[in-house]
Length: 575
Image 1 (spheres, rainbow, N blue to C red):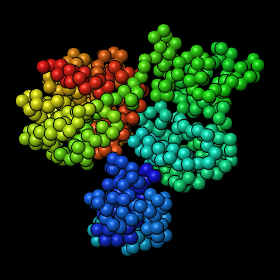
Image 2 (image 1 turned 45 degrees about the vertical axis):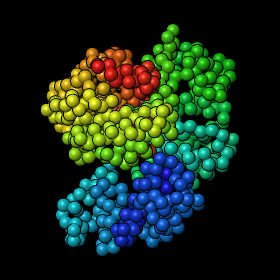
Image 3 (image 1 turned 45 degrees about the horizontal axis):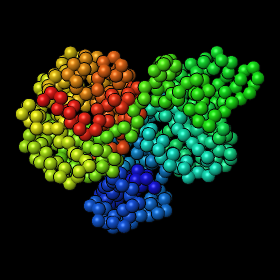
Image 4 (image 1 turned 90 degrees about the vertical axis):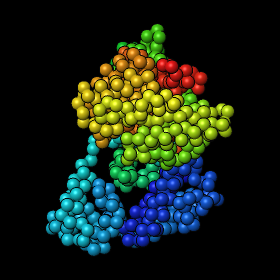
């Protein structure tokens, strides 16, 4: 059982306890245990014997964790669900309304559903409760409005964990020969309307029965021998389509339902010119009616005299034409090309793990190096480091580096580019660092000229090695600030400064179109980093690589595919 699943169940217990009105110590014990399990660097099932020795996990929570891992269930959670009405659960999804408040509304006003809550607001009953008031009532009304306003597409940061959990469940289903995600998520689009899976089976009826009984299914929309559509309940309703196919149809169905629409149209036009018709079942000879099927997508593309076109670039934006040229498609970057991660945080600032913990986790991933880049002094909210603290941290890193001869921690800093364009540290401090990142964290609403000058000013400093999350966007929550990306890329090329692809799935910044422009128009170096604030977030590198591939990047375009010696020469390029 994955840590994420265990952590979610522990958090559910905490939420139910808080609704029930349990004492804060007990609630916080389960909430803290959930966080600890979520941030563990190894599977919780490997640490069952030592749970009580982990700070923050007590005897009671340890027993519940063991029960969940060993049985997949929790008696405590089951009993809580029996006592508390199911209709209360949707209230947890209302922004600004926490479990404690829900519990009070249930006990004191007998409110047990969203409908009853809306009625109580209309009757102005909420404001009568001590500690609530008219402003709180208005916030709850606005939260309900947001809950009812379902976005058309969801950010990849929300959809990826859901897809991974569904895949864990599919691996346990009987009679499934193979499966794959499809649609927008397989192409690593930043948002997805729903989730699509292709499932190969010789027993579609039995598989359909298993699919509609997956743990999170709340509504069965369609159940048939070729398609199962369900709505699954996570933090929000997720529509999921399962296409059930024969094994010999799998590759064609996978290509068809991966898309994009534009790519598929161009492939169908190519087939038509050759006397064929493409469908999700295979390729049909129009004249004879003979249907050709394929074992893999590689064979599918080879049938049309094309190399395998990676899913990430199937957008109908020149990928087929490039595949036909003598040079063909570039050799796109792979996760295995990454030799280190150059942007992460530790407990020295706002990270959740020590430098040693992060280093061991990076070594476990096969990296040759990493950089600790905690925040600089101006970002007080994130525990930014003073000059003295930064140099003390470097001394700790120097000591740790004596322990390994196959791995190196680089001493770095994520330095604020201040609102007036100054850098948070002077050159005397920066020259002591192995890696210097320039980042904008404040004054996002400045106009394009001012913001662009701020970023270019940092790029022109000889000590700055790259610009992190350069446009500042948060997918689905905050748009990019007014930055002239072309001007930034020109400056980066002139100074040989790298630009980051931040692999945090909430950011993916630079986005794919700008990455392709950076590579093809400007020849700018890129660095793909996780900006990890805990060990589990190091795994976001795979999301970054998916986006890098969407941006047509190769290993040669990315500085953290270099060997350590090559990287150090790059970092000292201005010396």
